[in-house]
Amino acid sequence: MTGQGRCIDNVFIERLWRSIKYEAIYLNEFDDFSALKTAIKKYLYFYNYQRYHQALNYFRPADIYLKNTEKQIKK
Image 1 (cartoon, helix red, strand yellow):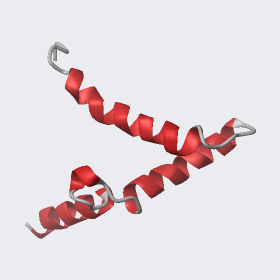
Image 2 (image 1 turned 45 degrees about the horizontal axis):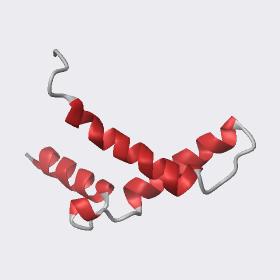
Image 3 (image 1 turned 180 degrees about the vertical axis):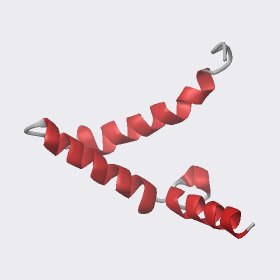
Image 4 (image 1 turned 180 degrees about the horizontal axis):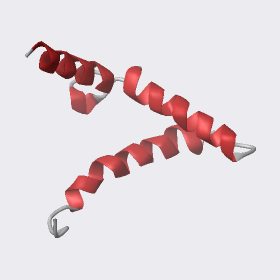
């Protein structure tokens, strides 16, 4: 790939990191790297399994992923 026209691919990752920073990292103070790593893991679990997303018609990402994988398995 040449990389031309691929700037929009980065939008999803940038949005995810913005959510992590503003909803988890900036709101807390961490003593060490392991505490930060644990907080990010907890937030990613929350983001995928508990948080409803407007862009996904108020579904959780895990719901959509699991529904689509079950469809593929049944084929």
